[in-house]
Image (cartoon, rainbow, N blue to C red; front, side):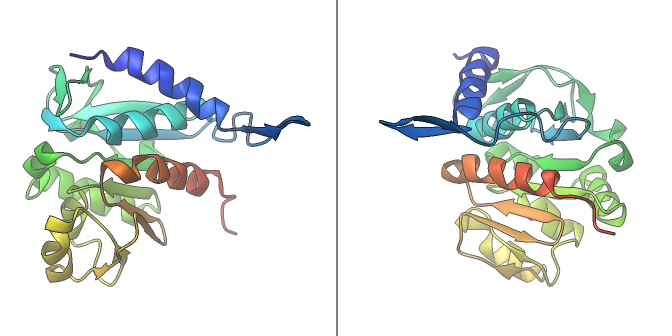
Amino acid sequence: MRSIAVVLGCLVVMALGCGQEGGRGGAKKRGTGTPLAGKKAVLIVAPKDFRDEELEAPLALLRAKGCSVAVACSSLDEAAGMLGAKVKPEVLLKDIAATDYDAIVFVGGVGASVYFDDPTAHALAKDAVAAGKMLAAICVAPSILARAGVLRDKEATAWDSQKDDLEKCGARWSDGPTARDGRIITGNGPKAAKRFAEALVEALAEPPKP
């Protein structure tokens, strides 16, 4: 059993290290600092069987870039990942107000199916879109967005098992590891967790449109 705090500590170091590159001539720093200072995000996990990497990678990178991040769930009991990670949610799903955050993110894993037809999750997704917030989901979790009706006519990706579900709900399927359409970002699974996290950072760092 792993402690998510230890794993996240390592990932933060890795995330910060990604801001450096160099060769024999020395290191060149780039992408350092806290470009997301003042930003707030909430990552929503299932009570059990969320996918560890899909929580850990965004959580570590967002925090490394200065974003304030909360973990939410339908229960405040300790949540368990598919690979053994443990996390104590800080916010109940029902208490999330989309206007309080810059990004609403649904973490995947087989447990995320508990939110597929959850009216609270659907209302939150709709509220995020209406408020112009970043809305994101990875693995099977894009089906939450699809069933909420916010992926209609949007390009999106997900775990392959969800393709029919997304298309039935009007999404335009993408075979890429991640997809972005306006303020909505989707990822297709654990192997895309790092790129998904980077896409969130890139989107949140964009200057507001006039």
